[in-house]
Length: 248
Length: 248
Image (cartoon, rainbow over all chains, first blue to last red; front, side, top):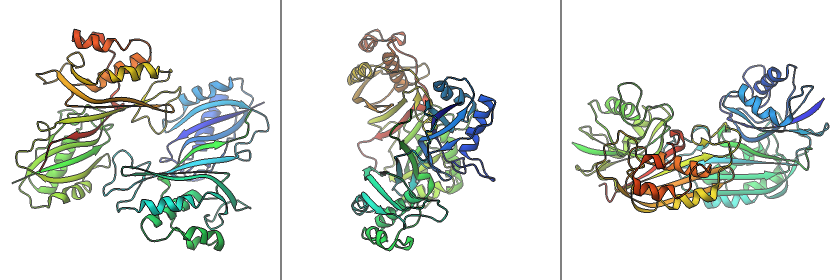
């Protein structure tokens, strides 16, 4: 028995999210079915991050155990012949037998993309949240910096998460502007359920003048979801990396 | 009678190119049909660039004449309610009655995107040419600079073009590397039929070690297509701008 880790890239658009569900096609189920065809055995795939419906991933990590003798680095090539083009395995490697994609993750990074111009885009509609009215970039960038460091993120959480602790440390949180595109990058020790989308939605509300950056330290104190902006649309979000101390 | 110019963005994937054709759906035909519904009259749309099947545009310009009384700046909003999501009108304005989107263009810029890594991408397959084996970036960047200035581009042309002169001036030609992505940007006074795709294909052949940068000055002299690389895939190419001295 070997434990193998996959690096996965996917377009979240066609899927009900990472996690297998009764109704709807999940990335996990599609990947497990491809692994079953490849290995000739039932395979359970454990992902690092339970991305929501519509959320993309450039670098999701998932592990599984197998009796098959396929060389570890060949799984990526073999799986890509069986998977739809919206899911690609960009790497595969053997990991230690107690490696856990989710519990061993030391950090994750996400990007949130916004297109801020009057008209929707033909090429970026699936990867950018479209906001037609001008956003106050200065206020948003000032607010983005307030996520850095260790904070109680209880307010930045939707119902349905399984977390028992709510303090997380953010090591990067920056907003960049390139023409009519805004790119928000956040990197941290961990993220609560819907946390990045609530952060992005709060930044957007600040950019629209509906909230002021002061709502963020206030929410750290109040732990109230009501102090923050709405949850931003899923399709602007992309999981860009999962970090581990060691995998092998 | 007023003359209106549209700025168009489109995903070239679903279309047989800009130009109306007997077999296949063109961007021009889809946009003309939307204009006909909107204005209640037959509309002929003249585009600045006849992009090939699969080629994208972030900034195509097209003009038409109309008797309708719709305010010029409202055409973009109205057309976007009638067009498929793969075509967006990002601006509309009244132009002088003798403005010509194609003949008045003083220059154009294009981007060609390459993904250089073993595995295809789930998110970039429609916008990047995928090349799985490592490319020699240094040789490609050196070659890219050789397009700058005035040259006889006769060799960089596919059969089927309507050009009568073959000298063009390139004002920008740069290759940038960002991780596993290469971005080639070229800006010039005009482009012959398939010229950017032949330039990109030649850069790729140089990156693969199949040609040396010296093939480019040689082709300026020989005017022979045989001195150059193959035509690069259409979907890596995007028209990013058309330049005019004045439109109004």
